[in-house]
Length: 122
Image (tube, rainbow, N blue to C red; front, side, top):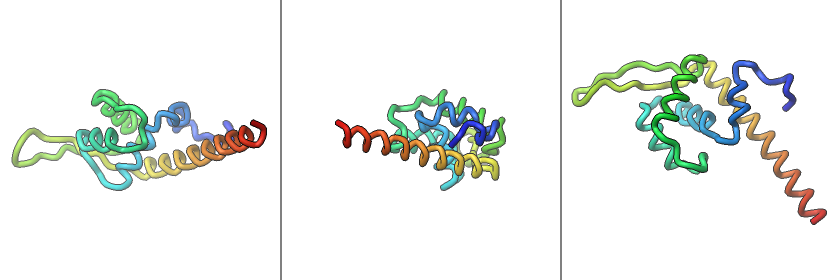
């Protein structure tokens, strides 16, 4: 994927693709709208992020993703406890997830080519 093909709205995704946090958030929200705490638990239990991610990092990314139109949130009130914010993927968020998949696929091809070259010349 060449730089001139990158959608400017997704530039921070491209810059941080190795960390896998934004793609993972998008993926889990693609599967099911969720509350922040639920997302924290899913992400830290998943094999997609290499390090445990703290609560502040998750919420900071969710806020940014909402500002960028990738997710929408709404407050939900329950019978017990305080209201919780639920997040779901927007249409633009689905496009961002596809963009992430393209970036990851490209990176996998590059890494595979590197490993093959190393094996063949090593």
